[in-house]
Every structure is written in structure tokens, then in C-alpha cells.
Length: 426
Image (cartoon, rainbow, N blue to C red; front, side):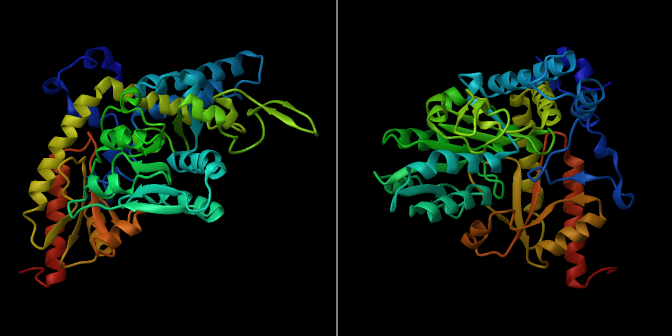
């Protein structure tokens, strides 16, 4: 029986009573045995696996409810519209957003950041204005701002980090000025696992009336996000990193900002009236949702959020911290291994280098042992430069992982050392 079948039983369980092996069984992909080895899927920062409830909800939509939303006055369309808008409500409550019309459906965090860059920032920026980002950003929170700077003559300023992968708050404070027009920072580094002190950073920016965007692509799956407490001006995440389908995500924006922004794209759904002379735009949130959305993806995302709530984000965070601590201690015992990024506040992501082998070779050998990790720059090339490494290997953990996955990782890394030291068979 899956976790979802016992949702009422699990919804209020204390951490000590959560049946983690049963939860793992809710993810059918994890039963595979690549190369005849148990699958240790440790690339959750890239994308998470999907529980049965998400897979089934998407299939159910296509089998029974498939129709376009908002436009039809027949039963199928009304059912599809109801499911689509119910997902918006679910996201509102999941993030404790003030208003449902502040939730915009997009393809993912990348599109959301581009939307803010083009619809909010670009019309307001002048030459020599400044945008602040941090040294640990994903390319999706770098390149859109570089594009806007090129378009407007504004300048991109980078908040430095220390050797542990932590934001240097004094430097951040010094960078804030009357030239700063927006701060855009990650809520959780995809390459290091570092959790920046975003609450303090938002407060400091707001003291100067500077809006803040948080890239929550990694964070939303790992701990509770309360937008009313954070008081950030924009927030985004991608569905596929939070156990939902690919190709769907959301942007939260404060209503006052969204109402003042021009639409990012034009076309169906985002209009209220069209003539050849001019067009009037729809009200929020539809003003930013041009065209037919990924309806099945939105339905699947809603199912994913319901699943997470069933387990409980506090339980998820505690379990993932257990795995992070276990993995950190085990990896630190591996010869020639160095962890990149040891922030005091960190989620379940470990980037590392191994003296004996390049990260790509590590990943290739680990794959043959059934261990799936990421190797490369993790869409954070400037961060790799900061730590003077061409790439890292990265193991990222979810609540469905277990200690056996970590032991399989460590044993496979020992094999890498043996292969590249020429000691195989000794």
C-alpha cells in the first residue's frame, strides 16, 4: 500500500513514526537495477523522481479530463479548469502566499526569472543602475540579468562568498546603494547546498526599498517556505525539482508589482479584448499566462505538493539532514576526497573533487555501479571559477534515499581510487 493510501495516518505522524522504506516504494523508478546493481539515484538537485500519485494524476487527466481550460462551456473543459485552478490554490497555501492571483504558472524557474527580468526590470533600468546577484547563482539567475544589462546599460554586481560557500553579509551590505534596483539570489545553492541568510538579506534590501527575487528552484522541496514571513517580492520554483512533472513551474509576485508590469508574452488567454488597433490585457494571474498552459503538468504538480504535505516538510528536512550528515562523515573518510562548500546552514547536496580522477570519470564509473550522480559545472560556471576547480562531482539526496545508497556511493568511490591508482586486483 502506498503512502498516499494511508495519508490520514501519515499526515500527523511524528518523525520517529514515518515509514521511510514504505515511502521509497511509492517511487517506481527506484526499483530499477542498472547493470544488475541496485539503483542509488543521487541526482535529485537536477530532477526528482515522481511518486505514483503524480504519475497516476497525469494519466488520469489525459484519460478522463483532457480539454482546454477557461474557454469551454462544456463539462470536460469545466473539469479541467477546476483542476487547473485548484492547483493554483494549492500552491498559494503551500507557500503561504497572500493572494491566489499572485501565483503565475510558467514552464519553470528559468522562465519565471526571465519574466521578471524583462517585464519588471528592463522597463525600469537605466545606464549604470545595478542588479545584485550572488557568486553561487545558477546560470538561470545570471544570464537573464546579463541580457537585461546589455539591453539597458545597467550593471551586474556580484555578492562574494567565503571559502565555506557562505554569503558575506558585510560585502552585501556595502553593495546595496541607491543604484541597486533589484536583488536576485538563490534560496538554496544547487551546487553547494548552501542556504543563504535570505531573511536578513530581504530586510536589508527593503530598508532601501529594493525589491528581492528568490530563486527557490532547490529550496521549495527541502523545507517550508513561508512567503508572508519572508516578504520577498518575487519567488519561483520548478515542478520537476519538487517531485512533479517537467515543463511546469510557478512565479509568485506581489500584486502591486505584477499589476504594474507589462505582459511577458502575447496571445491567447492573456487578453480581455483584441482589435487590430489595440488590445486590453486580462486581469491577474492570466495576464502572464499566454497560450494553452501545461495543464496536465499543473495537475501533476498539485498532486506532488499534496504528497509532500502528506509526509510533512519538517519530517522531510529532518530525514534529509540525517542523510546529509551520514554522507558527509562517510565521504570525509574517502582518500583524496575534498568537499567543496561546507556552509553552516546547508541542505542535502554535496559537491566534491577526488584527487585521483576527473568528475566525469567518477560519474562514468559510478554509473556502472548503479550510482547516479551529477558531474560538471552544475550550471554554475562562475562558482567553479571561485573555487578554482573545472568541475565537481555532486551527490544530492532526497527523503526517498537511504543509508544503503550512500554506502553504495562510498564503495564505488573507493573503486574509482583503485582504478586510477593502478591497484585493481591487489
